Image (cartoon, rainbow over all chains, first blue to last red; front, side, top):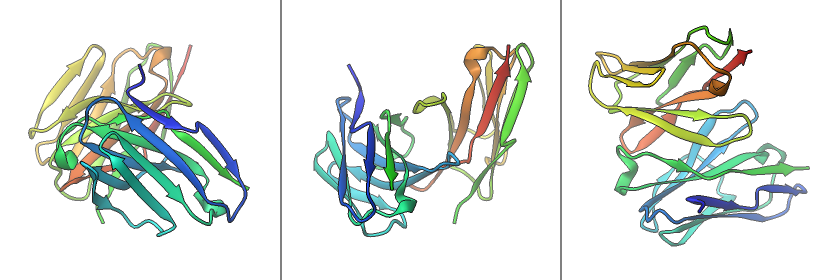
Length: 115
Length: 109
């Protein structure tokens, strides 16, 4: 059983398109995250949700909009895709509120390529 | 903003040699976590250090948290080819974990 799953695994699209990435966790965790990993492997947090509420919103273009329909799901919608959005996007989850000292469990990643 | 630095960026070792990666923060950390990412994979949690001067061991891996809680290290004794990957430290600043740039380890058989 996959603890944190993401779909799709690969996403190739044209500049200007809108796309979504879905994430689900079956660990019963309260907190979920989106990270972006660029070609140099830098891992940067984008958003964090605790029980469907946004708690961390880093400096990310407002073309990126997270949505959490329930605490087991955190989807990422990206409008007007740009070349610089090409990266691997990781979803993660952790147990407690605020992620203070919790282990983060990462999904397998979604490799987004914008042409 | 908060920054977490790691050195070296890359390390190539012969199988059986030791390996160390260092993590440094510009400010005091609440705690620090270490993750390993295999090539093509996702980050996997290794350990968390909370106390000043803390040392933890996992088989051939030794993790250390500095007295001032501004630096940490991961040491692997007698590397094996299964140790290949990128090792990230992540420092906790308030609510937010900030990841270091990682150290990419190659192990030559």
